Length: 245
Image (cartoon, rainbow, N blue to C red):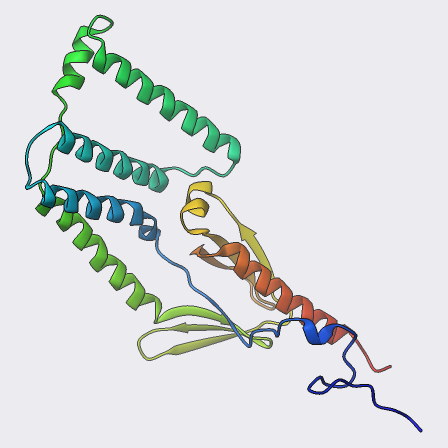
């Protein structure tokens, strides 16, 4: 007489310990964002500077000059993220080293008028200032742009299911279908700044029977998405390779 050792609620035939593994998601959503999403540090800096100037009642003094200088530094760093790629840790280290040297030289010339008097006068005359309205205007414009981006991605995104790769796009929800069981995936982190800001990177999808690859730029939580996709595709490979006993 045979006995059934299947645990309650666990389907028969599963290997030991399989009941403890997390369930696979039915679908994985991939969204390609525009590069403007990396401007959120400027948005935060503008908002904080605007609040400070509102409290300070837009007075003109060394503290408000410093606030404007910090805002300009954050804005400059954001522009550098837009303009250049830092694909390796070495390049990022070199950038921070050069930035530290440049900042140190500026401070040296700013507070020592005997080294380069002309440069000292130029730096001493640089006293940036902006009122609260300016900072809040910058923050407001970026907020509107971000809201537009959030609305736009609702009509343009990719969905990976165990059987298909789906592209949802257009206001009328147009749909393109690709086979996903033989889907190949490449993950690329081309800019360490972008990865540090939003854990973002590039996903390259290679559907079967498609001559061109699908490139998704600025996918957030890139490593998490890649791990989910790899796990789903790996489970599919095991399922298709296993035959009747």
